[in-house]
Image (cartoon, rainbow, N blue to C red; front, side, top):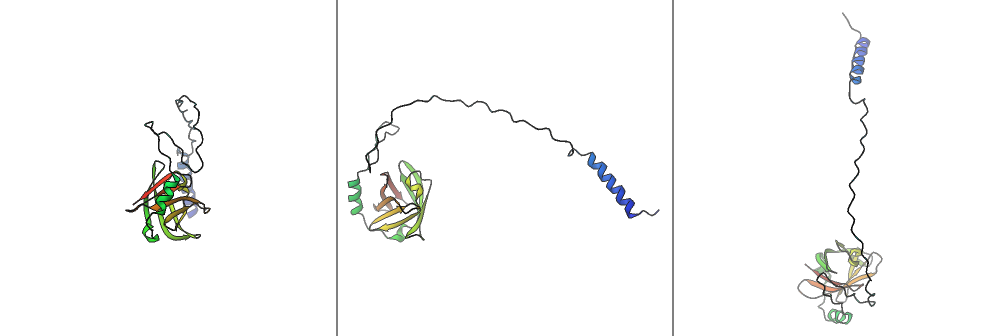
Length: 178
């Protein structure tokens, strides 16, 4: 008994339609409501008087965790140390450096890629002015670091043995080593 193509197609379509009606995909999934989160504990808020503002150009004297104080950077001592520092060659500064500044550590990278009138540089993990470093250059025997607007954010000098010391424009001491 010969079957026509139309009949086979009609039976196949009907079987497919009946099979589709049996699927769970047609039934809507009940909406789930998220469970409310437990209340977070809240602590007490205390207030106290802030210390007086620091002198311009000086790092404020702040107490550390042990209750002792950290000494402020003496600009005259910094200038004298920078003036007597050994000369620096630009190629000796290229690459990755470890930075300690303001009690925290981060990384600095110096390249010879041009960035305006300076060379490109940057930091990773720094939290003070050094976080905005985009360029660097040599000025005499000092390494000068700049932000994206060309403002000086730090000056460093060679203190020997693959180490640079100096301070940020805000007066925070900076120590850089390999």
